[in-house]
Amino acid sequence: MPDVAIIGGGPAGLSAALFTAKNDLETVVFDTDETWMHKAHLFNYPGIRSISGSEYVELTRGQVRDRGADLHTGEEVTGLETIADGFRIETSDATYKTEYAILATGADRSIADDLGCAFDDDDTVDVDLNMQTSVANLYATGAMVRAEEWQAVIAAGDGATAALDILSTERGEHYHDFDTPGDVPAFTSS
Image (cartoon, rainbow, N blue to C red; front, top):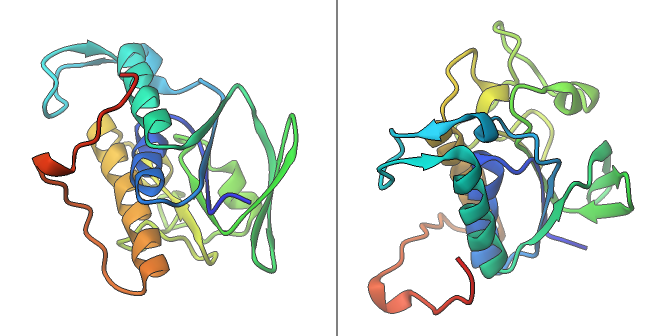
């Protein structure tokens, strides 16, 4: 059973996966490969001069795999329900259980609605500062929590925020993911 299941493989979902997998939480990402990033070109993402959205996604997927996350590209989540110890996820291929779930499905808020998440006056998913929804251990990120203010950097930050909150909960204290040059391992792919 993975510790964290992430539904969506754009900047928010992949950012969350980087943090959780790197910090030894078993992480699975379900990605239909329908991210808006395939239509984007990044000129305004810190540290990147110019890159196509599709290239960004491929590079970030490599980072996520290198850190140990299990990517299920093309495996669509068809249902998510709460259970006693977390969530049951139904996909086109299998059934999974997880303790934490992060929704990173862009502006598609249907899963959050099906789970009974609270929505705000803008008809976006209502979250706290840590991206947690009104459903315990369920996080929402990116375009689903913002009315028309969508940007890759913001989405990636939302994913990181959700991941750090999960890591803080798991460790029982505030967790700050900060590496130094001496911490950098050698990875086999980009």
